[in-house]
Image 1: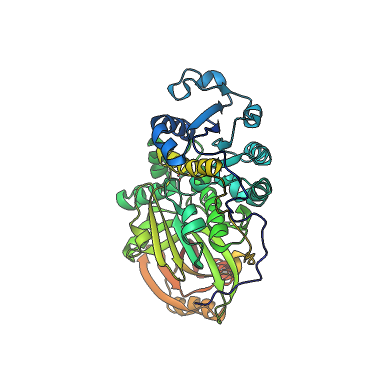
Image 2 (image 1 turned 135 degrees about the horizontal axis):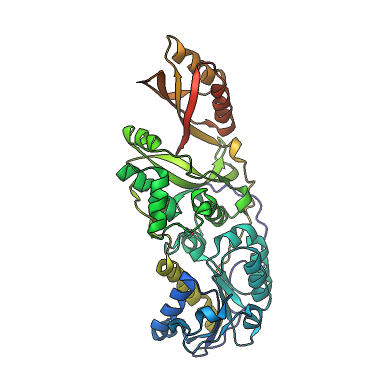
Length: 458
Ligand code: HSE
């Protein structure tokens, strides 16, 4: 096994060391502050009450919820999940309470929760958060604060809710070399693409159905434009490659331009269109790692690939590691109860450490590989265009590819009204080179329209 490794930079307190972080002792209560009582917060509080005896056994001491911070107290007072629990709009005072050991952040957004989480960590409270946007934007700052204070920072629920993928990268594959992570990490968009494929409905109708069923948010922009998946890709790449990858490093393209015709064309070629988050470790000819890349875009996946069968609003993450080989994790990636399950798992871990001492293994971006821009990465294109139906047009257009050093894997032509539909599938080539070809084709006298460009899982 060859692990190409840069010189490791020790990160203080990056790994938990029992003894350095003394515990409160068996049987002592663990005080918890819950920030936010939306769908997930409500479910967390409900499960904490329902499982309290079991959780106390598993932790070694009872969890006691000291308070719940919300924006509008009147809206929540009297609801059963907060019976006997203080409800406040003063999150800062709740966090600062001496008897709060762990803060569970379920507010959403970035700036305000960032302030609260930093305040909590600096005050020596462990933090559990489901906030992908926060972690993807500010993991460096948050991790540093957690390391300085010697407390835990957990965020399993930030990626694919109940699917234990962050813990898997953090613990289970901690001794391996992850090569690639590709996943369906957004339930709303998978529901839309699946509905389009199985019923033939348009993107707009599928989005309306996703909204009606409660999968999509009232403003589904973050889902359909890929931003939600990009945050998750940043977290997965950071954990998997021991390298800081932030939201801004992730190339992001959503599903808003996918048409029923694209879905149909995919079906005809035994493929399925999925919105994939792809995190890759790039290697040179000698196997040395040259960098990492993370991206989100609609992707043609062969029907025989395990990710092609992931339907409805399910998520799945496919991991390739040097020693472990191929692994796939599948399940509910969204929703109150599945997300609460991940939050509770983290909470049990953080609470155990408060009782018994020690810290959980933290992320450690020691490898510090360069984050390679998407344009430099090899991809494959499936280009669907309408062209003039004249003798020699195919040879002419094929030259545009060969002149740029890109070889074709398949070409299909279909009669279509005034022109011909030409579908071209390339072999792997540098993304920016392929983009350059599409630009040239768009200006070609024989190309009436570029109908769609969809990448293949290279
Ligand atoms: N809106 C997300 C999804 C869930 O549809 O998967 C939270 O990340």
